[in-house]
Length: 181
Image (cartoon, rainbow, N blue to C red):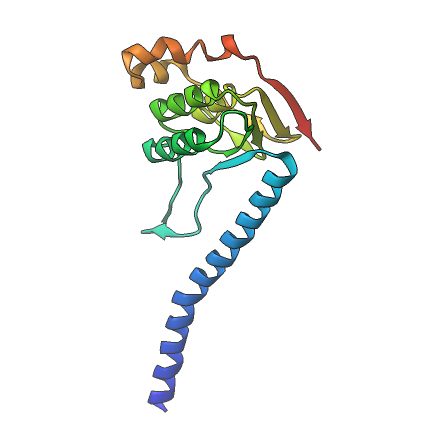
């Protein structure tokens, strides 16, 4: 009888370890197919920056993501690898993050010679708003929001030579905005 219980416990542990990985891989494959279909339909390069509350927790505290230097490195690489004439569609869902990283991404989007459209399905707060304002067009869900960019935090966090440039972003391109219902 005790051997059967151990077998059941071992099977439950194996399922608990394997099932989440399998479900995550299936979700990632589905996302890749949707992104490829979106790129084909719009003739653009789709880049995503999605920060959401993860279902995993450390000591009962859920992980949260924000814009960091790793994000800026990945997005800068994706923007540089996009051909000059190809439009960029950036799907942005973030609570914000490091001003320096957001500033780098925004400037790279401004320098891209093709059309840049930012899609905000739910929210883009703080640094996410700064990135969105660097686009030619912002497309938002009817209930989506852009959050404030705190100039004081930008002034403290940004490098001195970059601070002035970050606040001139909207002067060279004025994004158009529209909502989707």
